[in-house]
Picture 1 (cartoon, rainbow, N blue to C red):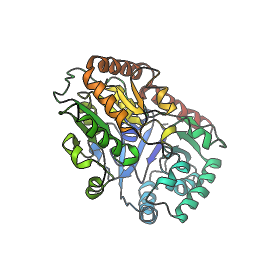
Picture 2: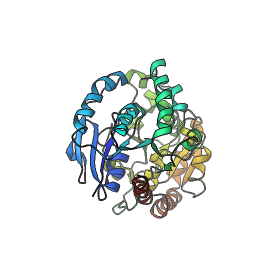
Picture 3: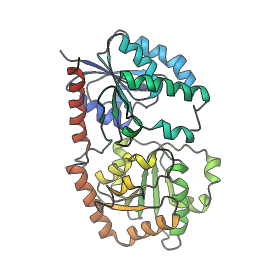
Picture 4: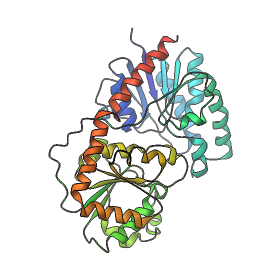
Length: 370
């Protein structure tokens, strides 16, 4: 008899790339899936799954007070065998369902012990201490999935054997019809903030325009900065003609547009847990066959420099970024060869299909323990 799995988050949107486009397809043929995400539409899903939409509130207090009752109401009739959740605020909910007999898998996608210091929202003394308390409980009670190997250092005292399931890109992206844009273009995919490199990119564009008059950087993702905050960034107004902000765009559409670019940008600052966490965008860039320009963290170098599929630079050095972008524009054949090497890496080893097999095996391992 197929087990029923509840995949749930009170934060991730209904089109989240990892949950919707990777985890659900990986599990759908083996389990009956119920997915609860904020503002979810059935049309967001490409596979058989029961979908329940949740309300979304920015303040974590409202999520606990108002989203929790909705979750209990919508899930009680189902009585899932396995709860797989993605945000720490749902630990109390998972504890209740574990008491009711469910097996719980907690997926940790960020090291909050390192990131709390830079979070601007939902970071009060009360919430921080609640997180510390419930996280310690979770370590004693739940199974864990981590998205990064480095998180194992923080979570070294677990009662059950964890697994790392990396957020690699899917292989097999169709590169046919790839045509470079007439205007030299670069892509940035993901949440847009200064700690993820926006300021460095803007300054680099102002340096680059001294040598190259016609180029563009395309940004795909939610912009966390308001218009007045953007305009206060050094050099924004002079760089603005070269910056194109598309807003949030569907995952597959981003990949399709990105394959015409010269390179993908991921110059994250050395803050929080960034130096220990792969930005999934670098694998997306490699998966569409374009080189990567990213931060010179040791973790990133082991992928990008070791496989000669891009450049690792100081994320605070706009001159280095501008020089690397200029190099890409002037040496397109070399850039294409780097893109080919990254594409090969995704097709052979660093791909979601391999991770999906490990995810299914872990599920069966967890089930067999009971």
